[in-house]
Length: 199
Length: 171
Image (cartoon, each protein chain N blue to C red):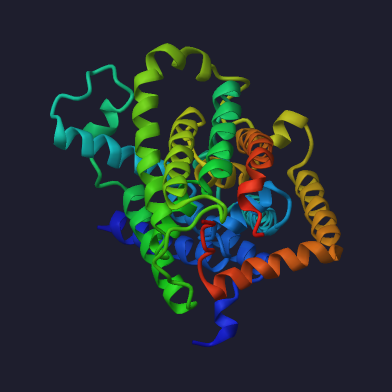
């Protein structure tokens, strides 16, 4: 019962935020990959920095231990090529898995189609698994390797660098009038409705 | 409907809200937010309903089929869909339509979404998580894997987006 309520509540907030950020709109999402709309980068990097600050802050206060929360290990080729597959999926299909579910929820039929595609991709992976698992799932480095461990620096230095990168990129694209225009157009497209396919 | 609501949120406000939610999720459940854990479970369970012995004991999906769909992440994704629906209704953004590249035909849009979803579903199993489960929830505790995922995601995504750019031109 706790599993159901916790899942539903945290998932509801997740979907509500993604939709509010405009991530149900494939033009916004693919615009980041064409560098004409920076909302995806800004939202993701702000979220990573805020949660990392809270996680490492809570650890410094003794509220949580890093070993108690799930920190993924590096399986170099699987992690890198899998990321590439999800990136290609967004360039081609307009979404990533979470945003396709939110797109479907906002009335987009192509979001539903994308989810069916994920099911097909999962079955194809199941078929390919015996011949690829040995090389994609070869672990690189220790369990739960973090950037502070890998680079032998304080997590606060990593956070400072990430924050500086976000501020620099955010400021640069914020100054760019053509980008602001393009982001406004994405909002306009939301207001006006779907783009008409060309006949 | 209020026009101000129809605009999407400021990205830094949305990002801060998402970061706080992700921390609360780690604090409450010891793991982050994800999506393809649920689509993998649902795919495995759906196939098993249609064909009982679809998966042999050594199949990747066998463990998912055995575990069933009553898991935290399946409920979380159901919540995600309800939250997206509520947000789009409240924001005046709910519109039934076939979205996609403006220059693609309806059939083209369906085919592209299906193809993109297939690449995404396959990729997310290779990396053991998608943009949410690995890119976001992995990078939040500063895991090297999360950032490695994001490098592959943006490099390959930008390359393919460049090739497909003409389809997205408005006029």
